[in-house]
Length: 215
Image (cartoon, rainbow, N blue to C red; front, side, top):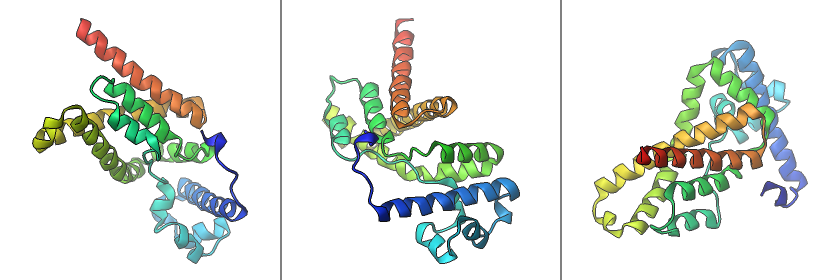
C-alpha cells in the first residue's frame, strides 16, 4: 500500500514538487490557449523554473502534458500471476495484478482531474496519451504470454496462436482498466479505491461471461 511507503527525503520531495509544478503549468496554459500557442519558456516561467530545468524533467511540452504511463507492479505480483496455473481464474488473477500495478500510479487527484478535463476538450491530446500506453500494452502482453505458456506449454511451439490470444486478452484488460479508471475518476477516489474499482470491474466482466455461458 502507498501508505506503508517510507517517508521521502527532502531532495525527492523537491523533485516531485518541481515536476508537479511543471505539469500544472502546462495544463493550465494549454487549457487557456491551446497546445500550439504554448511554449516551453512560458511553461517554465509559470512553474518558476528555468527552461533547462524543464528539460531535466521532460523532453517536450507534450510529455509534460500527458503524464506518465502506468507500469506493472514490481515484486511478486507479476510472478504470482504467471505461476497461478491453469486452475486459476485468468481474469480474476489479471485483476489482482492490475490492482497491484495501480499502486504505482500517481495519486495526485487534482492533477489527474485537470488532465482528464483537458483531454475531453482536445481529443488529439487523448490520442497522444494513448500512444504513451503502447509500452505498457507491450509489457502487459508479454506477461500474459508467459501466463498462457505456463498454463499450456504447447503454446510455446505455436507463436502465432500465442500472440493472438495474448493480444486479445491484453485488449480486454485495457478495456476493463479504462472502465475502472473512469468510475474511479468520476467518484473522486484515491489509489486504494482505484485498486478496488479494478477488482470490481474484472469481477463484473467475469460475471457477465458466466451469465452468457448459462444462457
